[in-house]
Amino acid sequence: RKEVEQDPGPFNVPEGATVAFNCTYSNSASQSFFWYRQDCRKEPKLLMSVYSSGNEDGRFTAQLNRASQYISLLIRDSKLSDSATYLCAVKRASNTGKLIFGQGTTLQVKP
Amino acid sequence: EAGVTQSPTHLIKTRGQQATLRCSPISGHTSVYWYQQALGLGLQFLLWYDEGEERNRGNFPPRFSGRQFPNYSSELNVNALELEDSALYLCASSLGGLAGSNEQFFGPGTRLTVL
Image (cartoon, rainbow over all chains, first blue to last red; front, side, top):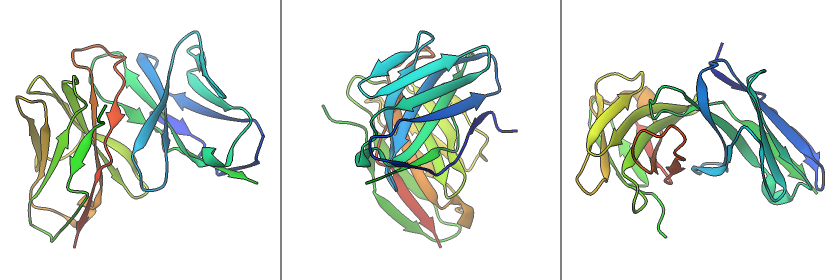
């Protein structure tokens, strides 16, 4: 079993839809959590860090559920430009510097 | 503010050769990380440098090595190249120190092709 798992999708949604992705992690000592966005053949771009209290940035909301060991990303009012692969990343409690990435979830927003 | 920069953009080598990839972190960042993204395999952690020292390495053979210079830029060397080394090599930087929550910002990557 992979340490960080995501549903690869693809998620095909119409413009304006709300879509949610989950990412599960197996190491309960994991300390820090992040969502990245990666466009085809480009580098991952940090979308947001995920805090225990949850956090929101415009149309994007991230939440952490430590009890069930998953993080989520909610995108409201989807735009065509949101089409990309969304990667979750986890860092363990022991300081390794290492981010462990999920395989990514592909989102395709259609007109 | 300039982001993480990497060079070259593309690199083509043949099996058995050596490759050198370079990375300059965001100004003020002292930690540099290297990741490999091979087709279908996702991002895999390679190396972490902070303040000129190697702090951690991923599950890669010793022919993957690197260093960090006094100006915090970094170099990744891959010796005795194999076909499966073909991948996008991504460098990331963050504020230094041992804070686990430091956010990592990625450069555009070097696409290495081994023929």
